[in-house]
Structures are given as C-alpha cells and as structure tokens.
Image 1 (cartoon, chains in turn blue, green):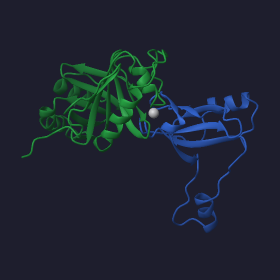
Image 2 (cartoon, helix red, strand yellow):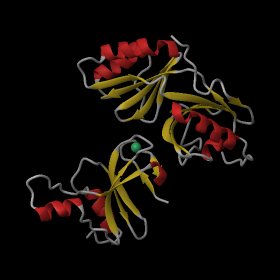
Image 3 (spheres, chains in turn purple, green):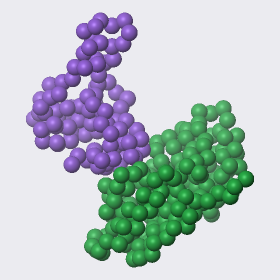
Image 4 (cartoon, chains in turn red, yellow):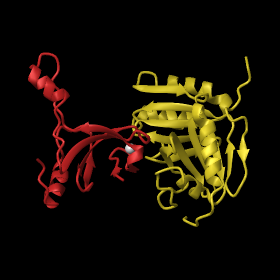
Length: 104
Length: 187
Ligand SMILES: [Zn+2]
C-alpha cells in the first residue's frame, strides 16, 4: 500500500484516495513537431526499475495534482512536490542521492 | 412548487453509533483565492464566519464554512437561506475570479452520534480518524468504501458526512452496517 503526502493539503493520503497520472516531467510535442518527437511524447515512457518521478492527483481529497518520487521496486517514497515544476526540486534529488539510488 | 425533501426522508438507524439523515441543509460551493481580501470579506461580512484554515472549519450560529481545497470552501446554512446567500456571495465577489453555486439539492448530509463513531468511520475510510489526527473542527475529504465523501468532526461524539445525493442511500447503508460492528476499543 502506497501512502503519499499531498503537498497541496498536507494530508497523508492512502493510494485509494489518489488517481495516478503516469510519468512526470514530460515535454509536450504538439502540432508542428516531428513524427518521432510526437510519438515519443505520446507513447514512449522510461518505465524504470528503481527511482520514478510520477504525477498523482488527490482525487478523493483536495482534488489537486502533485508530483511524487518513489522507487518502483521497494515502494520507498522519497517525497512529494508541487505540480508546477518541470524537474524535481533539489531536496528531492538530495534524498534520492542520500539513499544511494541512481535517478536515471 | 413541490416541497423539497431530503433524499433519505429522515432515515435513522439507532445503535451505539446512531446514523441519521441530517435533513435538508443549505450547501454552497464557493471557489476563489481564499487568501484575497475580497474572499475573506465575503465570508466574514455575509456569512459571519471567517475563511477556515486548511482542513478546518469555522462556525457562526447556524452557518459554517468548511475547507474543501486550497481554492474551495463549502458553506453550510439553513436550507431556506441558501439561494439568497448564493446571490449575496455572487454579488460580493463580482469582478473577482470566483465561482458560487448552490448545491443544496445535489448533496446529502448524514449525522453520526455516539462515542464509537471513529471506529465506524475507520471501517470505511482510509483517512486517519484517530483523535490526534482528526480533532473536532477538522474537515477531511476522503472516501467511504466506494463513494467520495467529506467528513466533519463536530465534536468527539458527533460527526457529519457530506456526500452526493445520488449515493446517499448507499452511504447510509454502509455507515449503518459499520456502526453495528463489534467495539474494538481502538480510539
Ligand atoms: Zn490534497
């Protein structure tokens, strides 16, 4: 069971209160982009064994989107952070580094 | 015009924890910038109750303001006052980015009373309902079994549950069933 602390309302939310939003920090390639870039944006995901950055929505709670960093193998959660950023903040990457996990 | 009735028609199940239809209740969704002076003024001047802190509530007489999200509160008021209050709030917030909607007929309110109500809730929600995590005055949006619901801890012996009108019967049934459970002495 996964428990993520929603950074918007501060609630430690059970997985069943959340809606998953897939891989985080995707760069959108829309009209005018190459077919390869569009395919990558639409379909290609990292799906790593280890540290993963994800989007989640506190669907049954405050309703807001946020980001989470966790390990897909151990379910260890390194932290949650604002949805309004394009890369994980330093305190999250520091925690991952401290846990001795590679981020890529 | 037909008479308004609450969807549960006064249903009530007695026990160590009593689950009952709280009856018709005025409910207004109010969204906007909770920290803006206009929003605060609308709450204090029209409702008499200030903007609540995150996960909190404010009460003034028969009115209450419940924190729903970083940009949303739910106003509770007597059913007969809801449409006039909605108009007053809309007028007060005109020109600012906001949303006011009278949802009195879209939602239902159930009341739980009894010392074991935390155990009843714990059987249905993933939310931490221990006294230290869910003190009186706190509001928590979560789920009760398969349905979305908001819970307000009114006191240690009373809680209110807000859910969609369409699932009120289901929420009533699961709460009444959970209330029959063997006491566990958890809280
Ligand atoms: Zn939240």
